[in-house]
Image: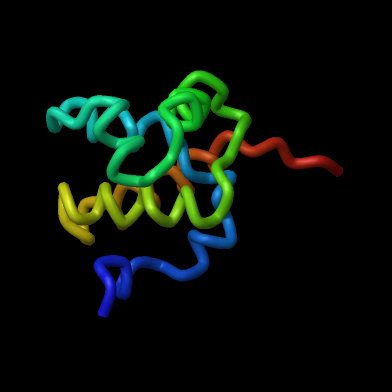
Length: 99
């Protein structure tokens, strides 16, 4: 089973809830620089930086899934799952409801 086998599958359909820059910052604090992350995900460093610098930009599915897998492999599935859940709840609390 993959590292993400136990993560919520629904989250992958709701990438807009995930704050990609926060996941990248977590990895940076664990001594993974942007260049290392880019190399591990086989993506250009400019792509990694755009996920942090432009929060309105979601990664493509494969890139986002790879970042989630890396985060889970560094911090554990439970921690990554909690981060995603917290992000979803924060987005739900701040969501605008239209009449």
